[in-house]
Image (cartoon, rainbow, N blue to C red; front, side, top):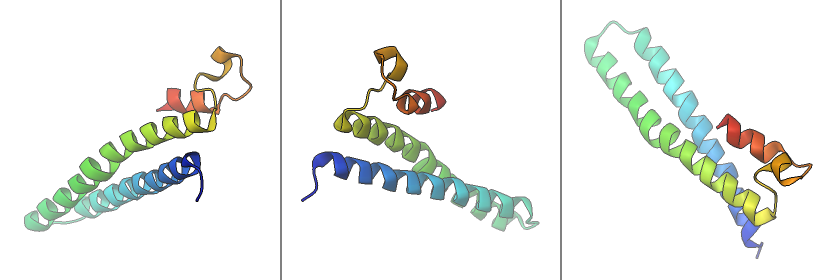
Length: 98
C-alpha cells in the first residue's frame, strides 16, 4: 500500500480536476445563459451555473488549498520556501497566488 503522502497527493490532484471542471462548467453554462432569449431557460442555466460555482469552485478551491498544504507538509517541502532558506519556492508562490 502506498504511503500516506502519496494518497494526499492523489487527493490533491483529484481536487484540482474537480476545481477545473467546476470552472469550465460554470463558464459553459453562463455562456449558454447569455445566448438564450427564454426566461425559464435562462433561470435554469443560471441555477446550474450556481451549482458549479458553490459546490465545485468555491468548495473545490478550499479543498485544493488544504490538500496542497497537506501534501507539501507530508512530503517535507517547506511551505514558506525562501523564508525558510530553501531552494523550493513553488509552494510559497502557489500559496501567495491563491
